[in-house]
Length: 227
Image (tube, rainbow, N blue to C red; front, side, top):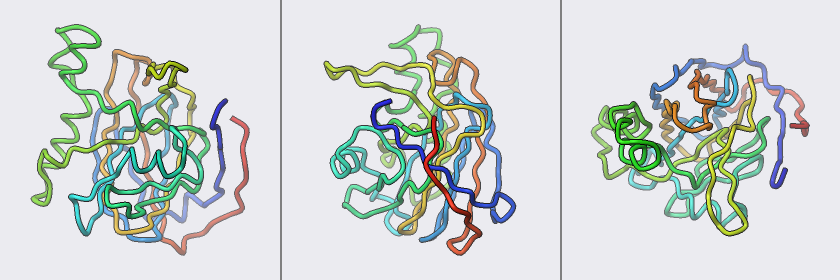
């Protein structure tokens, strides 16, 4: 598979200081300190986890998909990818990944895009844009103007040779995960995608799990894995 770069980390789950399950369709927001490690687990497989990143010190400085793609010279994210903000500041680095490839150009579903892609009667359906907005409203430092480009972890969005996008059946599986190490104070916002209308979730949205280790947490030897 093009750009596939899977890497396992044998970090102890028992040593994680934070462990939470995000139900299908729910949101989650959390601040990371530099050196902390966030693991996002695709619990049942074939789930898209839409994620936004902000500088905690300056919430207006959010993740830049264009800056990240340009810097790494690749459309997809995987082990070794450094996620940068609009200012060019390094926010996080992907340090382990048992899926191997993640999308950052497909965007997040919304009521409006659902009606265009599928049918007008999908308008009232739950969507990631609404989840992001609901979570952002919980902090006075954010407004709807801070809705920014996102990463779609575990989501399969191949780019055709002609430059088109297609939304395909997922390449992930039960228990596969991606790990990100914070390089700066970072606020992470997740919408665990409720999308029922395309194969990104296998037409059956499922839970995701998030675990966080401090920088000095127990770590085992990792290595490349076959996906």
